[in-house]
Structure formats: structure tokens, C-alpha cells
Length: 569
Image (cartoon, rainbow, N blue to C red):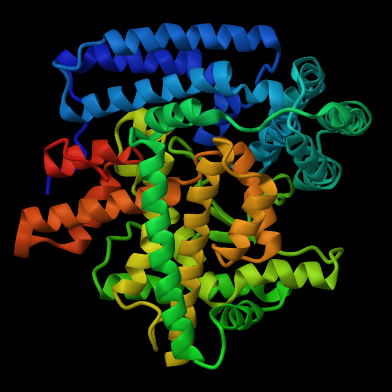
């Protein structure tokens, strides 16, 4: 294995680190203050993104300037670590330029504004990194700027896709409820009368602005939402190149995805047959999906997996877990509920005031119909609860987060590639069962339950295979939204409600193939490391060294661990 993450080099690299700091301090963070709050840089708490067209133009120009600076910086004099940072940062800047100039969500997606400002408030209230009064003062300053953000939306939005406006309208009641109920509740202990008066004035203005925005979307924007969400093949390929350092042609990627889909379908059918040969795989799946806890027991079920997973990981020497502190489970924030079932929310790399990490689970609302609740709970069966706990917590996202203090690079503390982070978490779902988890005594009570857990893992793998294919096909004009929903159901073995949520997500997250794409690249890297090291190969050492690299694109990890630029796929 290569040496662990070195500290930033001095001397010849000083100019590089100066350029990195200049970029983050003068461009990235000033234009993305909510990201500053999330990172734990609380000097940005009182600021809000400026959504005006003029500011978008200024941001684009600033990014283009730094793209030229980073590209012109000579890589030859840098350490291997800094060379990787240079490639990663340049790709990230180019991706932002692509988004602003070619994909243009600021012109197409009304939810970016309403959910954007909601998230900006949520980052201040989600963890107690400072006294409540101090955080409330920052929130008031941020809320004072929110009506202007929604006004900018009205100026910027030009013929959005109908699905984007529908998603925004679906999210808005949750956004409004968040400001009306959750935000005041979060600061109920503040006693400063003058500050509270300022807060109620600002918060009421935000609620009124959101209600006005909702009414405007219904009466004005929705009837003229006839745009196209598809980003096209050229932009899709460029985004993959810039975000993930993957330049494989889309037709080859589709062939890889279909091959994995068919393999996982075959495995699914074999496991289903072993459970009950008298039933079809879909009938067995229906039984699996019906085997779920009641909604009010859901969070407790997830909590109950943690100790067993940690014990297995340590006993079988899977990966080093740097901390005994477990994540905190909670219901998903309202502005995220329409497009996610579960997620991990970890504190930023620079956070010092509160280190708590949150495992968000979308618990069905009591206001939903019984049929809707049952359909949603099908995603939380005995198999997928294990798979999701592995993905989000142990040894997935949460364990990767626990390695962040070992990372010295500012680039790697602030940015990540989804094929690395989501690829790692998805890889862990399969790896853990391959290593013996999910067997009787380790997450399963008996052989039947062990098979159901494997079935759940395969069902999650099929979901990610379907995302892979749907993302490419929808955005290159080869598949409609209705066909995508059917594909998730018929080929991905998902419920129709899951298919609808996943299809909606895919319209604005086109490259959500990064789960399976990343898993493929990690599996190939592991195989190549085994061939290189032979009997000396250690799974735990491989995983530890992988996580020490941070969330950089996987070709950079390959170069660090293998010492070459061999193909990642």
C-alpha cells in the first residue's frame, strides 16, 4: 500500500496552496455561502446565495478565470497528492461552468430557489454549533435576503420543464411548514426580545414570499412550463468527464449497465426460487416488500442494526472505524422528502462546534393514505433496512466521514466526487454480504432471513442499475418519463411509487449512475490491488487506504494505490 495521506508539501507547492486558498476564499465560498455553513466555516452564516442573473454572470466569469489559472499551473513540480488535487479542482470548476452555461438549472428549475433557501436555513438550525441566539442572529440576516432570491427566480425562470415545476410545488408545502413550525421551534429557548422581534418579522416575510411564489407558480409558471429537462449526450459526457474523470462512451456505459442488470436479475431469481419455488420472483419480492416494520418503528429498526454491524466489521477486520460515536437517526427534513428515502448528513470538515451526524429516514406521514404508506414502506423491508444501514452508516458514508480528520487537503475537505462517495457506499452493500454479514447471527435470525437480506441487497443493486440506464436514456432522448417509471418497476423490481420518485430525481440528477459506476471502479481497483500484492493483500488495509484518499475521482485513487494510470473500468 502507498503511504497514508501526507501533509501538504512546503516550498515548491506553496504557490499551489496559495492558488487553492485564493479560489475558495474569493470565488467558491463567496458565491456558495450555504456550502460554507455546511463545511463549518461560520463566517458565511449571515450570507445567502445571490440568485440574480447579474451575479450568475459574475460567478461564471470568476470560474472561467480560475479554470485558466488552475490549468496553467504546472503539475510537474507538485507532489502526487497535489497533482491529484489539481486535476480534481480543475474538473470541479469546469463542471460548475458547464452547469451555469449549458445545463442552466437557474433558468429551468424553480425548486432550486425555494428548496435552496430552505436548505440555507436548515444548515443553521440542524446542529447546535454555536449558542442559539448567535445562530438566530445569523438566520435573521440570511432570511432578510430570501424574498429577493424568490424574486430573482421569477426573473430567471424561462420555460422550465413541467416536472421541475411540479416537484417544486410538491415540495413547497413542506418548505412553508418548515419556516412556520420547525424554525420557530428550533429557537424557542431564545429570550432576547429585540432579536426575536427581528426574527418574527424576517420569518413572516419568508413565509409570505414562499406562499406568493407558490401562487405564482400555480397561476403563471406551471401553465407555461413546457421546457425540456434533457441535458443531451454531449453535456452528459462532459459532466461525467468533469465530475468523475470518466470518458467512456455512453453506448459502452449502457452495455456495462445492462450486463450488470441482467446478472443481478439472474441472481435475484435464483435466491427467490430458493425461498419458494412455487412462486414467481415478483411474487417473492411482493412478500419481501410486505415484510416491513410499522412507520413508527422504522427509525428504531435502523438504530438496532448499528451495534451488530460494528461488531462484525471489527471481528472480521473489514475496515478500521476511527470512532465509537454513532450517527443520530431522525426524520428527513421536509424539503428533501419528495426525492429521497434515506440519507446521511454529516458535519462539515471544518466544523468544531458540533460533530453530530444525522441519518435521515423518510418516515411516512400520518396524513398519507394507507395504500400510499404501504407502498412507501415497501422500500423499508427487512433486506433493504440492512442494505441502507450499510450504505448510509457502517461501513458506508458515516465511516468515510470519520476519515475526514486525517485529510489535510483543503480541496478534499471541501469537494467530493459522487462516484467515489456513493460508489463506496454502494460497494459496501455487496461487499459486506460477500464477507458474511446477513447470515444467521450477523443480522439474520435464520437461513430464510439471510436469503431475504441478500434479496434486499440485490433489489437495491437493481435500483442502481435502473438509475444508470434511465439517467443516460432519459437525458439522451431514448426514454420518456413514463417509460422510465415502467423500467424501474419492470426491470429494476421497484414499486411504482419508488419508480416515480426515482424518475423525478433523474430529471434533475442526470448522472445518478455514479452509484453503480463507482462500485464497478472500486471492485476493479480491489482486484488489481490483489493481483499486485498477492498474498500480502489485506482487505482492511485496502479499505483504510482507500478512505484516506478522501472523495476524489476514482482514477486519482487508482494512481495513488497502484502507481499507474491503468483503466478504471
